[in-house]
Image 1 (cartoon, one colour):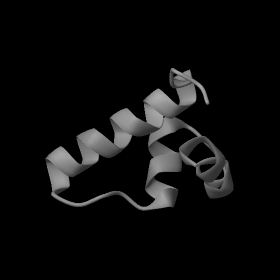
Image 2 (tube, helix red, strand yellow; image 1 turned 90 degrees about the vertical axis):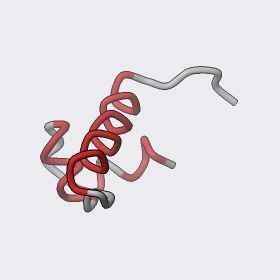
Image 3 (tube, helix red, strand yellow; image 1 turned 30 degrees about the vertical axis):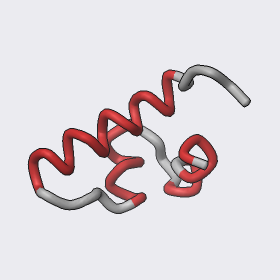
Length: 49
């Protein structure tokens, strides 16, 4: 098990935290991808898991 998050994971975490603070709910997988600059929503899933 890793003891730290990758830069991509940190970006996704920041995106989710900021989105919840602004909108009061979690962003969709597609919205996370847009916010962190990933072209495919399937690119979001592996770093989160």
